[in-house]
Image (cartoon, rainbow, N blue to C red; front, side, top):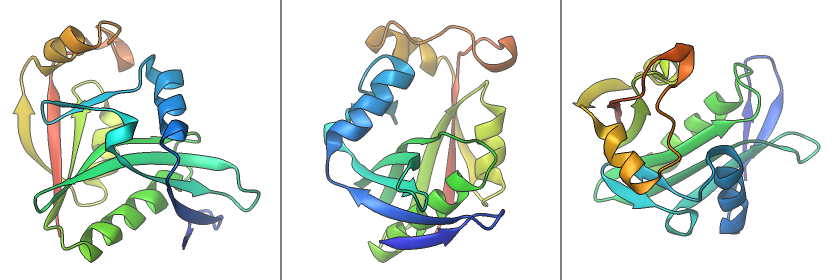
Length: 167
């Protein structure tokens, strides 16, 4: 178990989770299905390593799923229950440190074109844009028909952007 402190001084414990059903329930509740598309591949919770952030009462505050492909840690999902409280920051820091310990050379994440909060989040942590996948959301909709057509701020969801942190 790893400990981390949020910007507001809240102590969190970061724990690896073996029970894949926890992420499956979370993804299904949030997105309607137990699957994410990252780098053109569909990943279910069964395929992912899972890590979560808990407060001192053992309430889960954030959860992430990731997988190692070659020398890259692909971040498939990261969700915080309480946004802008520093919880996801502690979680991503733990994931980056774990990637380093595994010998990974980079961490990659993918966001949709409407998700300015995610773009801001990753860029503030030194991730850089490395690719734009035009019309990628249409490919997602072919797999997951319930993928929304409109996202944050009423922006049509069409493309995805890849961000990368070189370790």
